[in-house]
Image (cartoon, rainbow, N blue to C red; front, side):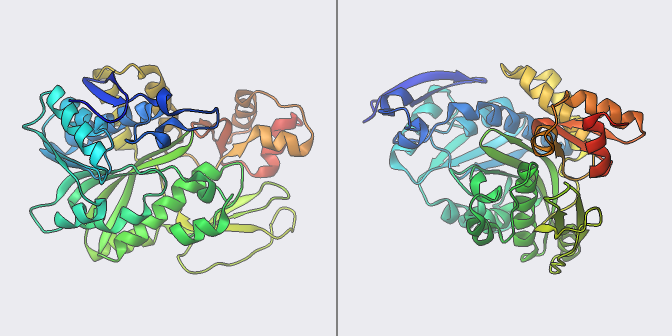
Length: 398
């Protein structure tokens, strides 16, 4: 099959796929190849796709069920093909794209990998496709929303198209709004106030989770975050969707606010969907800034993570070292306090030389505080120590 644009064949996981030759669409250094190509494909998201395979396999092992999968914005279809090929007991995969060229490329890739009996292609608007599968007994076991930008426009239709106790994956690449660079855009899209803090990437996950929980509650659907992470230009979460007004209410009880003092680095979390109580910092007396409403519960489930770790030891990935490192850090973070301290940012503000993050960790542990590294940032540290103690640990004054 010939296409109206240059392509190349790549290998990823257990599949081979024709994808746009991105170099052909980069005319100047500022050009971003994936957005310039007529069909979207981003090689930098390979680790994202690896983790999708791992998470879905962990979910399948945990529940022991056959899986019907949907990828509503598939591009060249490589993610859906990998899920069909690499995850056990995937019965059917529907991949979709509104772009005619993407559909032609995806069909070619299905034939190339001999997956025609398991994978089918649709050429529709993503929300329209998902709405067609909202009827009971037509719904999916796993939906992967991975857009270029925000997943918010697709939440409602995705929630209605999922079976009870099944898995939803969301990617958000619009970190500028979520991290407070574009404040009003975050308020519009996510219904929450961001903050430009050192731990803004964790806030991004919590704002996205909150938007999901509040959208689900409209349909008497509850949400439990099973696994989440932040890498490069995006945040990603996997959530268990359960039906029932009580489950929806339980989810809403985990919505709250984070109050942050830009004067002394103190931060604290409070529960409550509607109350925005401005407060003074108990440490230095300055006015605190507030982010929310956002998810204040765990963003990593230990049982699900353990299942992912077991599967990572079985499956072969070229990114295996990166995956193992990410999962090991996640294990340490699973029960860690909310937010993290950026040692480099604190040193900049305090005018101190920067010690090794592990040195600060050891000093805090020596004073009987809990402390762990975080995947969010190589200079980040999660701890139950108050900000004043963290500053003392950085300066070595105790």
